[in-house]
Length: 437
Image 1 (tube, rainbow, N blue to C red):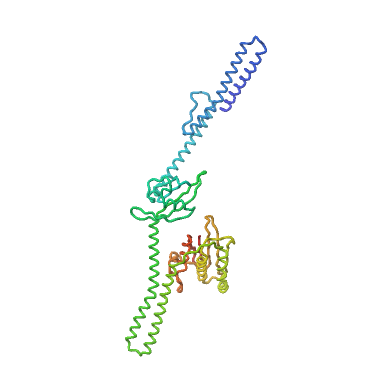
Image 2 (cartoon, rainbow, N blue to C red; image 1 turned 180 degrees about the horizontal axis):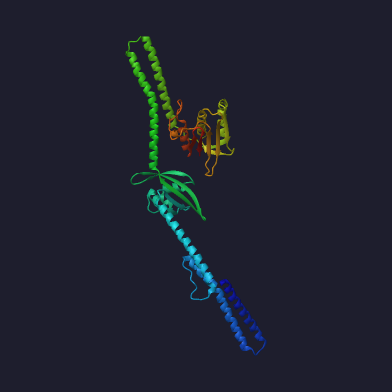
């Protein structure tokens, strides 16, 4: 209705304006209608000005509305005018302004919540532009880096250079000296693009306590295994030595003494050799050669390993499957990675107990995180959940003749390649080892 009223008024003004204009030109038909001509001319001018102001009022209100949006103030109601033609327009302006104000308040609340969370989390967060200018720097990051204020990442000197050189999704350990001790900080970076601006977001986390705890647990497990292996060799030697001393003091015949002593010495020699082999294994495990990196075609590498095991697979009725694209490659030490895969295949072969269909499958894929994953899966007996946390401990083995260094060696090799080895296993269904580069 209000819109119709506005249109009706505008129509009336146009009719009057047209009529006065027509009458003005009609008055020229007689030289005696001078006063009438002036009246029509004045009427035409007044209505034209009035209609122009009436139409421009919408533009004035729109400008006023846009200015109010800038500060989210209330829109003016248009003064004391009683003209109802613009009430709907003003009402719409107020609704839009109220919605914008509500959205602005909600956004401000979210921003404050984000700032509060960012300042109170235990992880340091900072972001900087390509020129090094700091955009975001929370309290934890300040505490870890030992600074109260930072304008440019390059002001951190050595640490700043390390953070700048971080690649997306790359992690790096950084040592930071404080007045009390030395922190071990894990830094991880991500690249962001906001509009045309490129930013690097870095998270910082003090992992010294976690590293010390993990290191202590690893040493405890290692010492426990070492003690167990050494005691298995030393205890029989001690017992045999004591028995041989008793033989020497006994009144038995010399021939019987010699025979018993010879057997005892052979047993001591065997146990001593076992202990020496164990020490040699430990030495080999702690002295892995430095990797010689080169580009390795994964398909070619796996085909070569398959040839090594082909006869054994046939003898044990093992199906070998591989799903690897011809173009997949990785920068690695071919000899070390080959040894790791060989060890894992040997473990899979020993995992078969009563399976009628024995399958070993190797796959290589590039998931979305752009990291190559080589997986070795079998449908063997699986690993007991109780020992899953021990299988990578050096010299731990559930087999009587097992050395317990295969998986420890594999983990060390993957660490040297800045990668990792993971395992999934279900008892009775099979095991899968994943090498992530």
